Amino acid sequence: MAPCQIKGQSHADVIVFGDEPAGLMTALEVRRQLLRLGGQSMPKVLVVSDADISAGLGGTIARAGLAYLDRNQVPGDMRALLGPFAASSELYGRLVRLMGVREVAVDPRRASQTFRRALAAAGLPVLPRAKFWGVQRQGRRLCTLRTSRYGSLGADLFIDASLGAQVAHRSGVAFLEGLGPRTLRDDSLALGWIFEVEGLSLNDLQRQEERLSRRLLDPSDLQAQGWLHWWPDYAQHPRRLLADLLDERGRFSLAYPSTSDSADVRSPALTMAFHGLSGWRPIPAGGKVLLDQANIALLPGRLSFNALLFPNDAEQNRQVLAGGNRPLPWMWPPALDVTRFFRSLGATKVVWMPELYVRSADQIAFPVQSLGVGQMAVGGVDRSEALGTFTYPLDFRGDASRLLPKARPTFNFGYRHTLPREIDNLAVLGPAAGYAGPGEGIGRIVEFNVSVGQGLAIATALALVRHQPLAALDPREVARLMPGGVVPYGRPSGATALQLLLDQLSYRLQLLWTGHRL
Image (tube, rainbow, N blue to C red):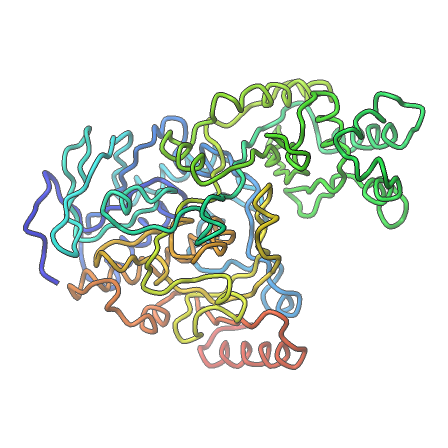
């Protein structure tokens, strides 16, 4: 692959664009793999971002505040071998250790500091607030990024790790709009706005849930009965409300500490009380906001709530991405009412994250190999090409959930869905990769993208050393070079008991064959 004749004012081996966690971890891994596979003594890997990283380095975690991490949900039949939250790659295991994650919760403040230290220790510069505005191409090669702040930046290979795939868009890559073709092109996954609550412990929250549940079940409490206005199904079917407010033993269904560092809200009591007291029509009733049943990360001195949702379409999603993921003006009034609501429950302070949690983007239309829902359902990529295995429900949250499949696939993944066919030296890492539509319900997850990034880093090093296009590499060779003795175990959805038993036996034999202990 001939080098670009167009040169930038400065040049790197690899430019990673965007400071998403997967991009930063992939940048670190690219440098490590260039040292390991390329024998380079001083590989130059550069991180470029349009973001103001003074508000936090690490995108979705550091500025959007995603503290409750969606983990690889190891299937029940494999937990005796792997544990309930086995990391889907060595690189994600490294991230978890770096961030001090016990099981689920990551502290956004610590994450930002940790990323800064790790990149500085590896000698990887970060160029923030770049004001990226264009590219220069030569045929099928991307040559430079054009920025207002740093001039033109050249590289031999580019990884676009921005949520909206800014580099790929500017480079002329074709995209599927919204969540996919035809009826899904106008839809996008719900936007979230994460907030942290101080002065309210999990026990305090549970007591408030019980108090509000008692009120909802008290027919003489006219105010609480008025809250049912937005929930006609409960008003018409009181037994359904009773079933959702009480557990199977007849006790109040309270926020459940599912791990040592997280909790899940199971009851609709908080949701109903907020919408009833504030007057905001909820999304299910045609409104523009929903205080959803929260995922809660237990952080030092505070609780992080991934709970406030806004309905979204593809056009609005692009508007938010173009605006640096900042909340839109119309989102502030309900957020202020959420603050008032939690203060009424005993909170002393509610802190809103500077950026929205953006779950989706338009996706590259012609990846070298797509990773869609259909392929996930049959077990993913072939085991010989797999970087690892991932299990997670296709959980879409919000209005778009009505359009999309319900599934919990266990599938093998590779890296070729990140490669647009139009450009030989560009990869798109994140929700804008090639998921053929609804597959990005999983493609939004930090752990998944970090693990894909490890294989992409190996492919990047090989492509640079051999002067080959990324798509020309044999994915089986990349899979063999994955560290940590990865043994994929993806299987078709609805696999039989015999298939699962054979999977376990196969997994044990492969571990023994590769010399790894169970």
